[in-house]
Image (tube, rainbow, N blue to C red):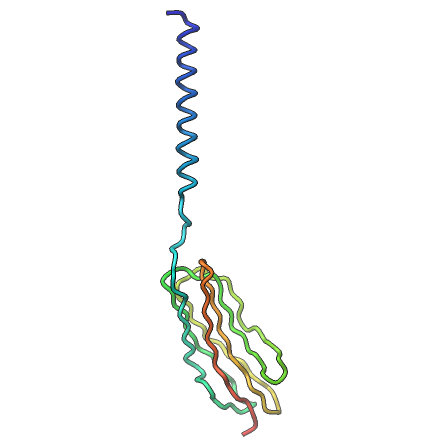
Length: 143
């Protein structure tokens, strides 16, 4: 057998192996699933404080406590105050997050000298785009 024919056979074998390996890598990368768990259910939000329709004096500190739970990773959550009379929205928290559970424990000081009504709104979105929202209404005034 000639040397050129041996090299030709080795070259053909290596070419086929490279082609086969490339095809396997390409096929396996196309079938790779996302690296996070998927969910058909939205996250669950519970605002434990304040309770709906609570009345505060304008000098009070309003403590806000909430929990967000999900069986897959979250993507982001926000806590906003919506002033009903003016339409102003104040963002207290806007966070990108990858945990499954979040605890919110914060406060705000109204500082108003007149009556005001606020919606305390917690929003959350997971990595699949499923979202949830919970809202509590509070009244702030001079008692």
